[in-house]
Image (cartoon, rainbow, N blue to C red):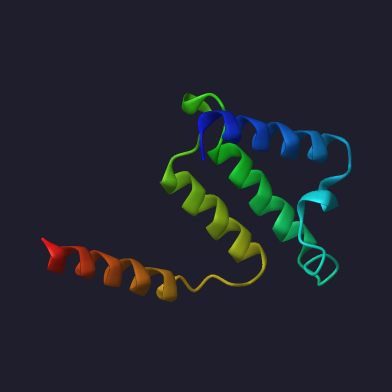
Length: 97
């Protein structure tokens, strides 16, 4: 995705967030399944990641912390699956070197 595309996507999502039309950005099959708040929060994190001003974008550590905080609010605090996947990716990269 180009910088221009990122900017357009971010502008569109920001417009939807401020005009109460956020449901237009979400797959209709996901809406109303009891996770709307979490979907909105993830959408906001994604918008921050494609901010047109790079210095305003969060670090990957901040993205991880934001998503972890969302998981904690939902009662899902077990990161073991994420950590195992990260470890497997790291090992896979070492094998290639």
